[in-house]
Image (cartoon, rainbow, N blue to C red; front, side, top):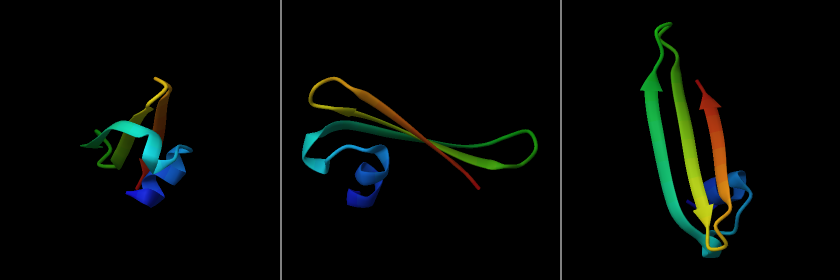
Length: 50
């Protein structure tokens, strides 16, 4: 989790909400989308394409 928080650009101490979505596209590509929110209300979004 610390590496993921770092990739979102937020300190793990300030991360108050986290969610991931993993889905398969019509072309059979696996996509991962991570959402985060810090204690100040700022939202972060991170995409990974495999």
